Length: 346
Image (cartoon, rainbow, N blue to C red; front, side, top):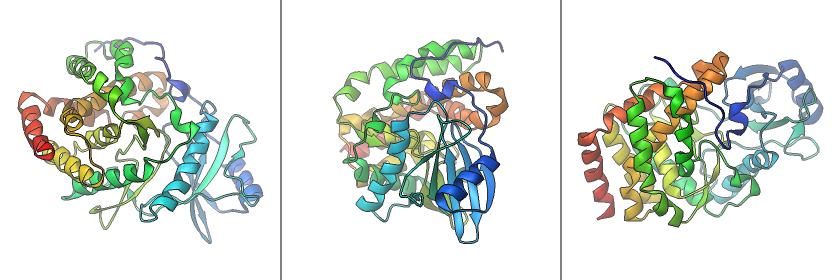
């Protein structure tokens, strides 16, 4: 298989720029000086930020050092949204921001003044990707996504207006990445998904928009009770303003580990609209929007793995699942999902 190296598409931002991980010693110095916190730092993998779990005698914290090319407005939005959610719906399982001893939400990371350090309370639970699929997860994920969007729909912040490569509404721009697939057999399915997406662009443009999490993947959902219960949602780094159906499509795209992914997507969608209703015409577009997210994941991760081979394992963690998704949504699978979604629009 031969693939071409292609240049960064528009709005690639931090995704196109590799950066050195933050040094634990430097982070520890900042934490003690600004938060009066000290303990043991454990690195945690991340797409853009340098992340650490801080173990102290008084509890655990998550420490995030931003990428040097991350928008400061977007960084501030991630802190602001947690405060908004805790006020709007205290039952939502999100992280609690921790201010410095002077009340600041963030401080400069001294070795690189383009980077910022933030601290939140560590949310207990294990990443969904560490557990095998359990019955009922699709309903729980859909319900949580709907509750989240209901709480987010009045949240406004300049940092939500970011232009991201992961913005599904701009998926057509990713055709520039198609050469990265070379002769990969998945190329035709990816092209077909992007072609189908174009038929929904006008509909999406007419939809009301709001802030959405935009990345409810298995690395951003926490589970408890041996993997049977969704216990938390983390990482608002991809938050942006878009139609709510995009949130649902993204959540559904990460259900391919279910024994019956088509059925899981239907269950997730039903649970979502029970919490945050969507118009019938919007729900009807869901199969193509889910396929679009799968195509996006394949293209973006293949491209980024070429740029940053040292982080390829983490970057490609959802690639195979997206390939499986596209293979499942063949003519028969699509017809079954369409019939299932029709029950939601009746």
